[in-house]
Every structure is written in C-alpha cells, then in structure tokens.
Amino acid sequence: MTKDQALKEGFTHKGWFGLCPVYVGDINSEAPLLSARWDCVEWLMDLSEAVFSVTMPIHHWLTGNEPMWPIRITGIIKP
Image (cartoon, rainbow, N blue to C red; front, side):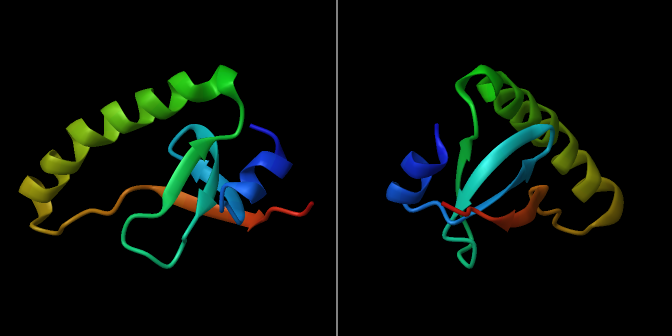
C-alpha cells in the first residue's frame, strides 16, 4: 500500500505492530485500523498476531493484568 492509498483509506499514522511495519487509522479507538505498509511484509503481521495471541493469555495468567496489543505509533503519514 502506498502512502497516498493509506491516506485515502483513512490511515493517518505509521508505526509497528510487533515485528510488522504498519499504517494505523482511528488511533483513539479501542480497535484501531491496521494495515501492513507493504504487501511483502503481510506475513509479519500474521506472525506477530500469532505470537501475541499465544503469549497474552500466559501473561494474564501469570500477572492477573489484561495485556494490550503491542502497537507503537512512530509518526504521522505525510503526503
């Protein structure tokens, strides 16, 4: 996905989801929009989701805290 396509689809920021570079939209919601920045790294998003889907229940079981998904915002998408 190019920057222009991301802006048209409502994505406003860039960042990381685990190991995958992503575009992020609707950052103030409980479920922000995520899309891999490039098609060739889409598998990293799947891998990151799988890893965290396994580790989050373990973290909750050990600590009693509800973990959050690891999304890091690194900046605004500039056209």
